[in-house]
Image (cartoon, rainbow over all chains, first blue to last red):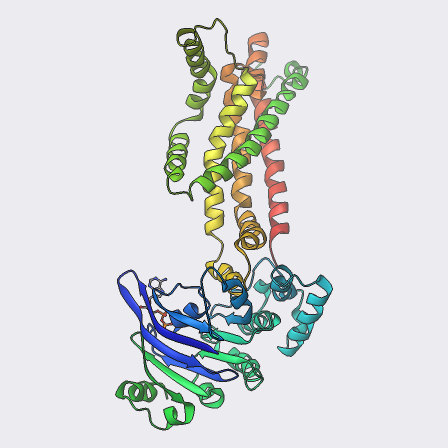
Length: 239
Length: 230
Ligand SMILES: Nc1ncnc2c1ncn2[C@@H]1O[C@H](COP(=O)(O)OP(=O)(O)O)[C@@H](O)[C@H]1O
Ligand SMILES: [Mg+2]
């Protein structure tokens, strides 16, 4: 589905991604683990070209993702959910969800609203449809952000620590919604520190350290006994 | 008997003085309209590699010197300069003149353009980068990101500062009296010269300014609260 080949990313002199190679499988859920600063966000952001790779290429269904030529089309296929929600603060909940449908997909207003209403119901937040983001809790904001990403009917969704900015009591409402997205044909790529959640929903695990993928494989293998010492230490620390 | 405030004597002059408020408001209004246009141009220039130098230089000069100097430059020095160029370089026997009103509009437009550009720039910078990224990640074009996200939020965030600049213009335009424009200040001086009253005309002018500024401040708060997204 998404193939990352020889990907390198520098910020100035800082080598943040070091020769990353990986294939994300269609319809599967891949959870990316690793300590803070290991390059997880940067990897995710290279996939939809929020960061331009310094070197290497990324393929979407065998088509090279190009930051100029095809990125707008590919971004419609790849949704993203951010740690800090990033809802449009000048738009109501329903406007947040319909906005890209209208300006990117040129969907008529009424159809966009109907699409949005279905999705808001799915993430359990229909009653707040006319509220502005400033009036929502973190958990509610993140559920709206998920609905906004789903509205474009993407084939892939990138989640960058979607629950890290939430109060503990709101984490589960967001994870519950995310669970409903697995095994639906959607390809999920999730950066998360929620180990219980990773154990439950992941098909594959990637473990990153210092800009490199140092361990990858089916979740069963990873959680039973990581091959590398660093991944073992990481699991020990977190569990 | 000591009369501190001779209302009887000043009352017949009040209508005359009040008419000056038209100049004051007109200068502030036109200068802020042109100032916004100029401010936008300066802000756009500041995003360009080479033009940004000019933009910074311009803003620096206009913020770094007093308005009264700028007004004197435009009204007295600039036409003289033009005239000597016309005469000595082109050998033309014509005289270039600028009316006091036009000079005031030009000066305050040029001056507020510098301040407004700073206001617009910080308004744009105040927009959360995350919201812009979220739009990009959805495939929204830069044009739409500017039109639907950056500009509305920047406008909302900079509205209080823009309104404040307008109020500053209302007050600072009082110095146009030095080039003879019959604004509130100038009219009070004329009344003084006619009646030898110093205190009364100034108090009347002070009250008018205060009321105008108060109304504008209240209006601005009203609009501000309407602009909030909540
Ligand atoms: N825009 C940027 N400019 C400079 N350095 C950055 C930028 N974004 C991330 N970095 C650096 O790159 C490294 C990896 O960051 P990141 O991908 O955010 O890690 P993670 O998401 O795993 O915590 C960190 O050292 C971080 O400081
Ligand atoms: Mg991160």
